[in-house]
Structure formats: structure tokens, C-alpha cells
Length: 205
Image 1 (spheres, rainbow, N blue to C red):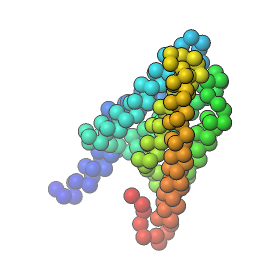
Image 2 (image 1 turned 90 degrees about the vertical axis):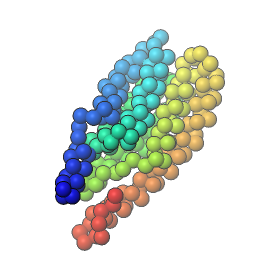
Image 3 (image 1 turned 120 degrees about the vertical axis):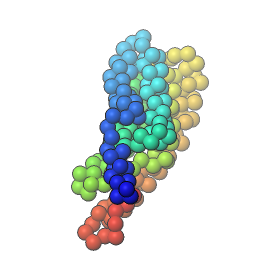
């Protein structure tokens, strides 16, 4: 009986058809929808509102996964990938519409590229997954709130002045936290590589 428990736990982690995974996939499928709305003159507000809804589901699927026992290996990869894709796509669309400055967008996109590259190296080269940290999730959430607010203000929508000021007020501490999280992930990469070397004392959690 005891020997079956580890196998059951592994089977649970290997599940694909879970509600959190469905929500993450839905976020990815909605990316071209809000991008087209943002790019089209006259529908920018609808695109930003849809982007906000997509951002909100990031916390919903994580909550469901933890509180319903539906955490899965696929979900641990799909969730952050959906975040990165949504944020990058939104930034590109906003820069094209001149609703968000290129320098600020590059700060986000360059950092995400580094994290993605490090994660791929660990996964493909060492079979180690770079786990998401709460500090990274908090920074991502802050940016996903700040960036649409700045764009909302620059599009000249309702309460545009307030939205622009509030957006930048949230953006700067969030981008700082984003790069602090990058340093934390860098330490995780070093630990992962050291732990995966032959003769090392084990692999990181």
C-alpha cells in the first residue's frame, strides 16, 4: 500500500486535463484577440479590459491548482509561459500603437528573454525545472496592472490622467522587483547546475 503512494503522487503531477491547465490554455488562446483589439483604432479599451481579465485568471488558476489538488507538471510550465506570452504580446501591440514607451517595454521583454533562456537550459540540459517564486509572481502582477493603466492613459480613455499617473507609480517599483526576482532566479540556476553535476549531493527541490 505504501509503495503505491509515490506512484499515485507522480500520476497526479503528470495529469494534463485539469481545470487550471484549461484556464492557462484559454489565456494563451485569448492573446491574439486582445492584441487585435488593442491594434485596432476604436477598440483599444475593450482590448485592455480583456487583457485585465486574462491577467486575473493567472491568480485564479494558481488558486484552484493549490486548493483542489490539481497541481501538475504541465501547469507549472504552462502558467508562467502564458504570463510571459500575454505580457510580451500586449507590450508589442502597445508600442506599435505608441501607447507605451519602447524603453520600458524592452526592460520587461529583455528580462523575460533571459529567464526563458535560463529555464530552457536547465530543463533541456539538466532536466531541472526553474520553479516560479512568489517574488516573481508579485512583480509580474504589478506590471500586468501598471502597463495597461499607462496604455489606457496614453490612449486618452476615461480618467486617462489618473490612469497614466497610477500606472507609472506601480510600474517603477514593480520593474525593480522584477529584476530582484531575476537575481533570485539566477541563484536558483546556479544551485540547479551544481546539484545536477555528477557526484553532487542531490538535486534542488
